[in-house]
Image (cartoon, rainbow, N blue to C red; front, side, top):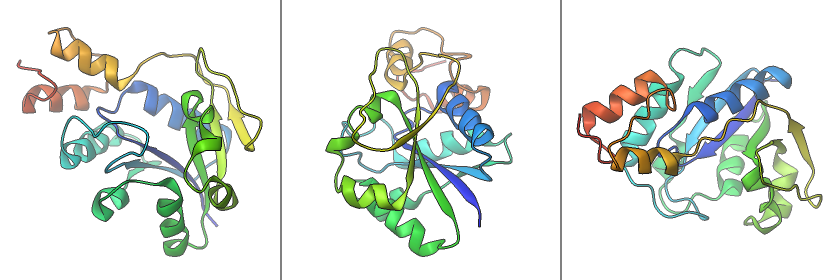
Length: 190
C-alpha cells in the first residue's frame, strides 16, 4: 500500500510555499509521494487567472526536480466545480490500494466544517494541516498537524507583484519564474 499525499489548489501560480508544505508533510509522515492536483473551478475561490493548461505546466515545472512529487490533471479533465469529495472518491476507485492524506493549509482547516459533503470526505482521507500565521484550528474535524517553517507567500501576492512590475524571483521556483516571463502571464512582460 502506498501512502500518497494530495495537495490540491488553483496553483495560480505554484510557489515555494506549496513545495515547502508538500516536502515537510512527505518527510514527516513518511509518504511515498505527493500528488499536486490543480483544480478546474474551485468552489471557494474565483476562477483561476490563467488557463488550466498553463497552471498544470507551471506545476510540472515547479516539481520537476523532486522524484517524490507528481502532477495530476484529474480535476482539469473532469471539468466543472472541483469538489474534493468527488476527486477523492475517483482516486480511491482508481487506486484502491493507496492510502490518501489530504494536505491543507491553516486557511483551509478553519473552513473544513463547511466543505461540501465533509462527513463523507472525512471517511475517505486523513486531513493533514500545515500551520500558517493568523489562523485558528477547528476541532470539529480530525486533522493531523505538521510543523513547517513559517513562510508567508500567496499566489495572489505574486500576481499583484507581477501586475505592478515587481520581481517574484525566489517566491516561485526558477522554472515557474521563467515560464511566467516567457509566456507573459499575470502581466509579466519581460
